Image (cartoon, rainbow, N blue to C red; front, side, top):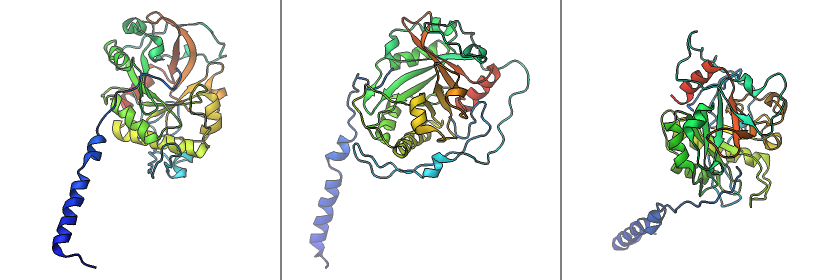
Length: 331
């Protein structure tokens, strides 16, 4: 049935007025971040040091999401692929002095030293740290001289929590000459899209920064008690990582711990770099068959420049491999 012309014009006018109302303005209001924490403590096609293959970006699509039971769906084969035909890895720079800056030898100590066997953290040339508010005030220049060549700095967790020391640590680490990146502690009872947007809002897109990190692990102190099915966990992670990769132009690194990895990540995300926590045994024993970029070997490190304990990490590869990797993923 057709409306009279005057009625149609009035209907159109009021419809347009409704569309330009307050809802779109409210959506732009940004609340002050909470200072709480719910957690504890790339460029595309960049290879993983020591891995036998390159990478293929697995795209993901998002469906509708609800507050807790989100339905963030991606193509399942994208994160379950194991064997892919890849182009050969880029050749290393010609023999000679590595370029990119100075690598400081580590002088860290450990309050709880571990015998890792034949291959120890000390066999690795490039050491670094990860920090959060719990390290308090850090003397970054001193920490750099102790052997911290890189630092991952906690930025966010959930969808509204910002580490109160992030911006200070982010700027100070850069001034001291460390290669630095930011990490996000994933909160399973919040949608992945919200968390990605919150991270992007708070972490600058800076040339030279290391790829962003998604920290996925169990947090027994969290108020999010539900244990999500593996398929849901992989979907959430894919949505989060795809958003970050589109924004920063870097493929995110996955940080995880043995129990979470064993339940959810074996065989998943073969084309993403991993940062593995293994404080009692070498990663090859804890995560058999998994390539890695960073190994967190201690949560009880001691160093000048920091009061109390600090997490210690190594990069997988020698000094030349380090600068090659940094040049590929950070420019």
